[in-house]
Length: 284
Image (cartoon, rainbow, N blue to C red; front, side, top):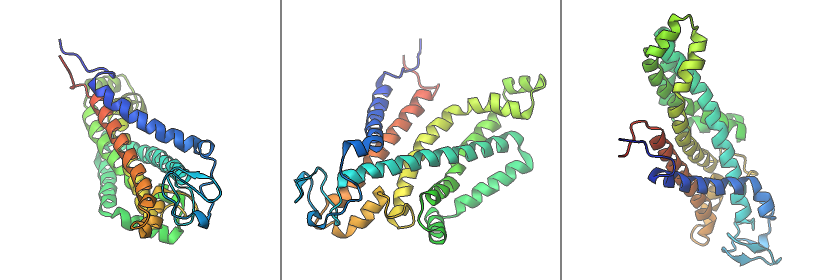
């Protein structure tokens, strides 16, 4: 008899590995100040461009080295993880709320509402992300709030399209027709019947959206229109250190490696969630 692979099967190893990596990133983001007692913004020019595993003139150990202003890279990488996780979590939540609401309304109600919402989605997809980020950053200035606005404004379309496709199929399902025949209103149908049946694709899509938003935040911070310069960010760290790459590779490679590892872990977790939640995945 065919049975579905459990969470501790071969698929679970992928999820366990990804969850472990993300757990480390989360711990360093939340407890970075307690784990590394060096201020991420403290500048010491006498200790500038120190390589990893070096000791500064004041006797302080720099496990990951220092940047061009003598700031400790370990402390700044941990602080950057806090920014990236905050942006990913908040951006996904806002984009999911907007996109899921729009997708449910579009797929369930149809007609002119469906056309209007999908037209807005097409218009948004026609706007280049980088151009939109630069425009908002130039007009309003670098800000964490502006970063969230840009990411949410560009991230809701994916949720809307996926949920719309689910709603178009679910609105003709027998349990929805039965609930409607019993006098169930449209609002109750959306919240109690359609939305729970869209939970699996929403969860999987959220994991991949979080990875995309981390990369997007690093990109616009690298361009100087994202997070303000006084807030440590992986993207701004790469931007500041790119001029010193020939003589101090660690200034760029460490934040770049943090981005790479985080994205790989999130994508692996998304793959595991997709495989685990797929009812067609069976093993003998």
